[in-house]
Image (cartoon, rainbow, N blue to C red; front, side, top):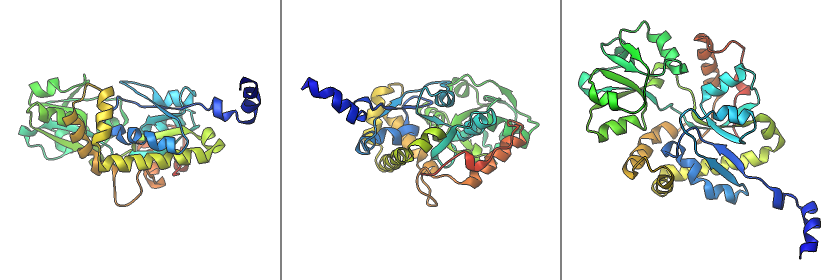
Length: 305
């Protein structure tokens, strides 16, 4: 049989040399990536070999994509705009998981604060990363602040120990940790301020997309089915992710999956779809807070497949 191997390789090189599509996550396996893991078998049915790479704090997924270390990357909408502003125009979004950004500000429930604006004009301390785009947008919109600000160290330790502490959060994560610890919390979505980028966005190089659009269309079809499956019944996929990410217990996996449903699924559009209007709004907002200098065309940032 060996004597037939060389001709076969020349005739059908893809049978042997087909490489996995490397997909870089920007955090560990959690419900925010549930649809990606739920789509594992669906990718295979489409003839795709997708290798999901676990991320962590500070994983530079967009740089990894732009430099061709990976084929696909999970990023945020504002990261794509910043990349284009800095010259990395070969990066394009093809699927947006969160239609409403899960970023929030978490306060202690005992304080009975009623709005984001009230948080910023109250006594106490806000723990957050001031350099992030949403933080700069909120500073411009609601500043000057009365609340003191300090760097966010991670976790909820300070929040638990001081009723006057507020902090940044993902509504699918830290508020659930607070509830589990028996701490009353009230969380405000940053999107209520008008700053609402697409989050958990799947990005690809536009050059690769142009080269093989059918392959990426199949990938998005499988991913959309994966998310539909996960939203309907997250438990099997949560069990699979829990074997990789042992830091999150199954109860939290399930609660997080439930909390995020309304942020992902809308009645207005198919799962993962994007609009030029939303991208243009975000470009205008980043221009307003002077995070970008160049004129960015919204239609260059995404493609619905």
